Length: 179
Image (tube, rainbow, N blue to C red):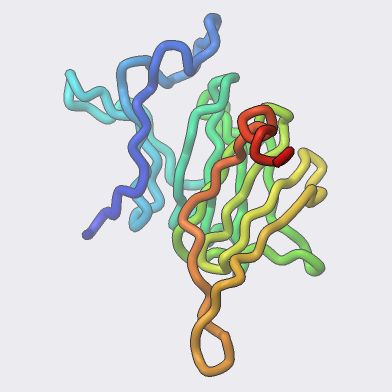
């Protein structure tokens, strides 16, 4: 597994703004190759890579297109002993937003990891190898967090991995909550 492709996202027309003038194109795919720190866009019909970036992350996971045409990327090892979730503009090569945690709330997943921008503007982050999921505001405040309670090993040092977590809107589960 020399390249380790960990994400394939098909770019549907409705994923980009109507007036979008950036490099990404509907009908193509975004790929993430963890082992070479590469996120790229590929035109499958032309069999060409037409956009690529590798300078802003290391061992990344799950780049996904946001409604404004920017990318949200889980950067596993971009900073020493810290992971980062960043919002990246592929047109300008600017990091528009990032979350790295702090001394009180460290954040690191040496492999795996996931992120999702929520409808309220917050970001759901899955720190997979630590068995943790949490939601942060744009200011970096933690709204809530969940630690996987399943442990193993002589001293409970082995943490069950969280591969992904999906935020379900309250209205989808209200009937469950009122029972």
